[in-house]
Length: 126
Image 1: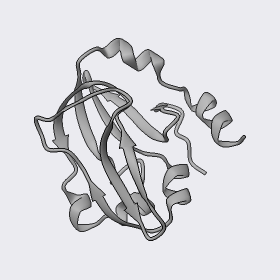
Image 2: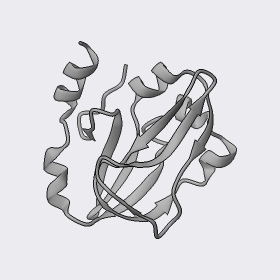
Image 3: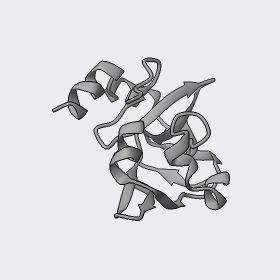
Image 4: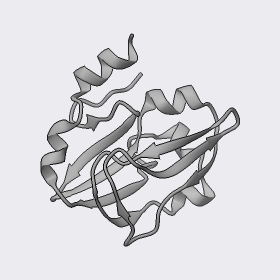
């Protein structure tokens, strides 16, 4: 199971990558493996405001539908539209090709509340 050390994580299994003051968000390798084959991804629109710990979209697999929770509050500045036609990318490449949104943080100090790779690994190994 892949848990890149340079990323931050949420207890709800989202990953966060800080890039030039913006935050790229996706779901973890653990999350996609638990969900099974992803068949549909619902994401917000560019310009939408999202709130930390509130749902911003959902992922549908053959087993279930799971909410996606915002790791940080802010404005959506980019959406990975490739997932509309190729939701299976979430299973194949959760950290590279299947990022979901890029957010301009309203308060970047919220990043300090996210988990390190080590903390996330402890949570999923329980």
